[in-house]
Image (tube, protein in one colour):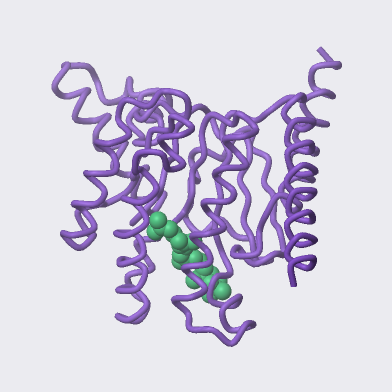
Amino acid sequence: MFLQRGLVWLQDQLTTTARNFLLNVLAAGPIPKHVAFVMDGNRRYARMKHQAIQQGHSEGFVALRRMLEICLRLNIKCVSAYAFAIENFKRSEEEVAALMKLAEEKLVELCEHGDLLDEYGVRLNVVGHTNMLPESVQAAVRKAEDTTRHNKRAIFNLCMPYASRDEIATAIKSSVEVSLTQDYEISYITEKDIDSQLPIALGGSPPLDILIRTSGVKRLSDFMLWHCSENTQLQFSSTYWPDFGLFDFIPVILDYQRKSIMKGSSI
Ligand code: FPP
Ligand code: MG
């Protein structure tokens, strides 16, 4: 029994050492500034494991924390994640309630003293129509954002309840309002003006370098449409989100590094 425990411990240590080594090697190459995740496949994962749907979402949160830490270890300055689409309010009452409970619990936990966001100096922005969330979740959002407000090393955009076309429409309205209050013609509004009104840009996030969607689905589903229209590397992985980890991420980063090195050498 003692020997068995010792071997498990040794195996974990080796894995941790190998993992740290891989992360250090990857971090020595070009690193994207901003990576976004469409965390898809939680329910299929749960069904595959004969679990309740909410268990799939809980394990989805574990994967989010794991990927966030990997990104921070690689010195990626900004991570965005699609946690809840406005459209998701159409799911069953039970599933929506479970997701809201998870958000309420985990938001506060993530930001606690000594936890991930504090350890890595990450500012949390919750992006979307937060007024559509239950009051207790809104209170957790305010608390989590306030706790991390002064963190400067990285940004984590948690998008909930979010829809990109709605975000763009709101930014256009704000640009028009600015033009009216500053008394210049609406026809002078530029792409840059609209860009500067998007909450993700307002929060100081750099342009999006990589967007990853899991679970084999190749759609954007109204996520960061404006942000991924230029030089963003789109990656579709067949892994269900709760299973997504370092070994799914390594080829994505290597691809980014290869393209960056090629771009650099063609200048
Ligand atoms: C998509 O998979 C996932 C979601 C709608 C929820 C994502 C939420 C998490 C990963 C946890 C978020 C953490 C916080 C802090 C709220 P799906 O439900 O569409 O699964 P399917 O594609 O297999 O049906
Ligand atoms: Mg889905």
